[in-house]
Amino acid sequence: MTLTTVSLSNAFLEGIKKTDVVAIDTETTGLSVSNGRDYLQGFSLAYEVGGMTYSEYFPFRHATGNLDRETVSEVIEAIRTKELVFHNRKFDLHSLSSVGIDLVDCWAYDTMLLAHMVNEEKPYAKTLEACGQMYLKRGKVQKDEVDKFTTAFGWSALTPELITPYAKGDAELTLALHSKLWPLFEKEFGTDAQVLWMNEWKMQTILYKMEARGIKIDTKFCGLMSGIAKLEMNDIANDLNFEPSKTTQLGKFLFDELKLPVLEYTPAGKPSLNKAVMEEYDRLLEQVEDDRARQVLNYRGWQKATSAFYTPIPKLVDSNSRVHPSFHQHRTLTGRLSCSEPNFQQIPRESKSAWSGKAKQMFLPTEGYVLISLDYSQLELRLAASYGNETLLKEEFSKDDADPFTTLSEEIGVGRFIAKTMAYGLLYGAGQSKVAKILNMPLSDVQEPYKKFLASIPGIIKIKHVVEAKARQRGFIRYWTGRKRHFANRDDAYKSFNSLLQGGAAEVMKAVMIELDSWVMDNDCHMLLQIHDELVFEIKEDLVDVYLPRIIGIMEGLPSEEFGVRFTVGQK
Image (cartoon, rainbow, N blue to C red; front, side, top):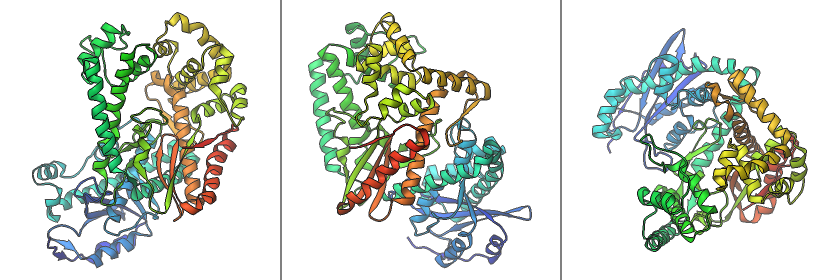
């Protein structure tokens, strides 16, 4: 590609010196920048001086009409000391770093995350367009024209002339959104606002570094497991004489042969077998004493494993066999992280199954390092014990070999699995009817032990009712850090206790990761992944004994001191 250059007037650069806040937006050939498949074409800036908004697009990787790199460097140096505003900062940082521009340590705001924390329920998609329409009643400039062109010719074919109005409009919209959202953020969180945003900025920076480093993948292992999955699924289908992947055949087996109850109906009045319902049937099949039920579970296990990670992950590796997942702070209502490209959250927390029990063997350490995985034990249940000041559980958690489910089972006179199902059912908002379905037991057989279960944890039941009442009355609840979970629909208040635990756990993970990044992480020890309540580290081989005690000390010590309940982590 032959690149021609153009010059830029100094007027815009002089204006930057007169402002404190500069919005920045990047234009790329696509979304796969962190793994090298796409690249940055240019960036736009916008700022306000004397009540007037000024913006400019800085092209440097188009076929023609580019600024010289010296000018681009001058622009970057001019904004480095300003308060920067992004919409999806992490993506823009990856885009800029792909051409050697490093703004990761610059103080910044992210209007996408501000919008999510002000109101995680609306707009559902926190895109620049959606947030602009909701808060400013305006969207992107020349969006339709650019969409039509890129659909026909691709983003790489855009010229500076075509993209400039669009790009400048994005930066201006981001700047205007910040002016609107930051006062709303301060009003929403009061004296907690600055600390909450500081922690969110730190967390976003940590996630950026994790994504940029990525993790090495054993693609041969993934290919082997995919091949085994196909063979296993084929053998099972032949044995069963039907394919569990076909819903009509599976439904006939579940309802006509096993006589399982219909859990949900489609709008057309037929038994539903959607993803969420099938998770319930998987639990029911575990309780059925029928070899065919085991085979169906095995088939579905192999099917989910190969479609979720063994097949797609190798397609996402870069030239160094590393994959760079995207962690999202804005895609769950509770504040829990989500993950995509690939979704590592789909890898089970713990499993002895042939299809996913070995899944983490796909992760390989960098030469000279070892991978260490540390996972919290019953994080949300420990939070519940703290919130409810539940003596029975707090005493159990104080033991080195804590087993709260055995303790509960002995307290109420049922098996450990039943006690565990009731406990997690309560944490995730399932009543006794749902628990009965999960256990595949008549409701009448569940009612009495369920009453004893509730009576064994009165503190948790009390705080659950208090939290739900506050959510219904105020339309929100507060996590232990001051962050809020909103309930615009007060009828959803029944979800508030689960949100308190999930959101509280997310804030624990965030606080711990920030502490670890500040005091432990360096060139010899890297944080690579967060999967559920688990953190994966890469540590120099000869320094594991140095770093591991520090990491465990922070992971266990910080929440234990905060909540007055012992928190423990285990190495996997």
